[in-house]
Image (tube, rainbow, N blue to C red; front, side, top):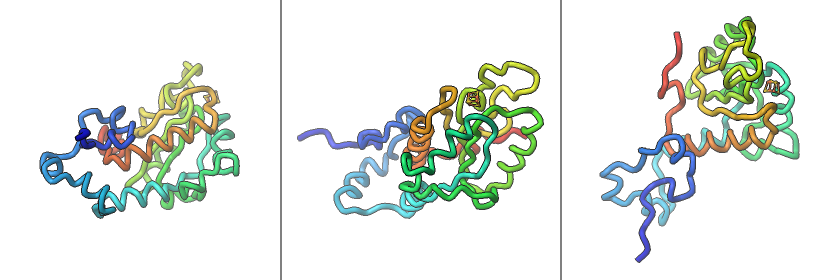
Length: 195
Ligand code: SF4
């Protein structure tokens, strides 16, 4: 008999392997075979159902900083169609947003407002650093630009390139969904929030 899948990555959830190599089912789940049971009978746990629902309604905050923001805006267009994930509702209030896409370089004068927006978002919340500028300062290695937004907010996903095409941002969002479905906690739980 072929080996039965025992880990989420066996079902194609690559992010679990990439982001959390040691994560897998507990000993109790292994003995009970819950993954197999769920697959066969269509059962799930409330926790997993909530995580699934959250990935289908992850509303981004309306927040753009520089050239990357133009690429970010296009993900709501019919060509990229982020509505298929229930994410087309960019919210103007951080209290109604779950996802902060930091799209562009962060000048020091924008660091405080950005952090304020992050603090006003309700939990659970996620952060995507879009592009090399948001991720590390990029080519702007100077006194005006924050050298990586993860100095002020915990980042869940880094999207490379300058600028990342909308496809790259979509890839990052899909990886974020996979990680959340696999049970990987948001970055603020894993790495904490700078004070
Ligand atoms: S990564 Fe490139 S496109 Fe994005 S903000 Fe920086 S310079 Fe602009």
